[in-house]
Length: 311
Image 1 (cartoon, rainbow, N blue to C red):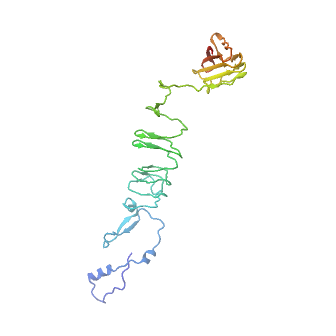
Image 2: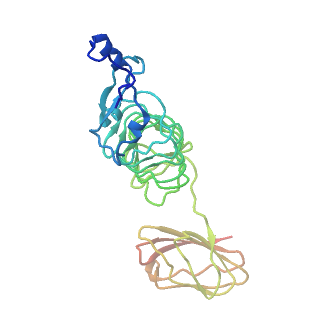
Image 3: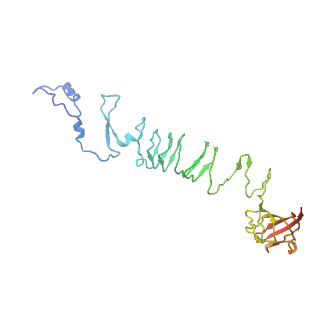
């Protein structure tokens, strides 16, 4: 709003020339009280208009622009040091160049091309954030999909990666402690230079494999937990009985090496141990004499044969 300079006068009954009118308009002044005295606006709609002067042409009249047009990619340069676009960016797309400070919050939408130098305290709760250099130190990545390119190192020390899909490219170093299942649908999983064995697949081993032989405790009733003692040793120091072995697995093979201590101790067997002809073998007597018993299980019983009298 402008006010005409009242000090500009014309002669009574005189002639007003076009030049006089130009001088009158040119001397119009915008006074501060004309602006501050207006009724304040508590909210601004997208269709409200503002007058914008062209700074490169001070003699040009201001032009009107709506609030929507002003902020819809009209700002083509500069830095936004404190931007809160959580309400304005509902399901939209930010395609231009925006530098967002560390206290900004993006709640929805997609940033198709963005530069986030360091993302340490901001929150991205919805949508897709793309960056060539981003550091996420805490929080939750609900779905991380890498369809092309290279992830050189992926370290997650805090939070959860619910789904990790890598269909093309290379994950150079993946270190994780799994609480669920790891499924490799195709290809070969390797550990160092050795191939990892796979279930339900024929395997050819090129190095020795063995069971960790453990020692059973001699006594009147001798327990054998097959889940942790598939190959076991027993040194008899007294007469004893092999109790019903626990955790038998159908199709599994078990081996027991029995050695006499001092004297000639005897060894009886629970009825779940089955022998050829229904007769259990007699233990070899004599100090340090050994017998080997080999069993195969049907899940209920242990069917055994003996190789005896080793010294």
